[in-house]
Image (cartoon, rainbow, N blue to C red):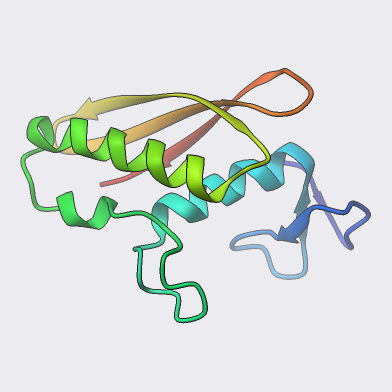
Length: 119
């Protein structure tokens, strides 16, 4: 992930878990996708509909939760990240641990991937 000490681009945000650093460009979009999926809908008082409903399936058996988690991921990304064209969610199950690989395309046409460890 490329980081800078101060933002030079129009689209940027502070880097997660790195004080004083910023992410820009494709890394900004990737981090935004991560934030969207990890934020429970209703938890941000200024944007009560922001985030996803992935939390509803945290206690479900992984095999039963996968189709719901994929659907919720698709809906949240399409609603909250207009800078990328969503392509697909590939769930990877390891026991009861589920990782989501989100493939998306930015305006430059290059396919990118964001990995979100869900549980």
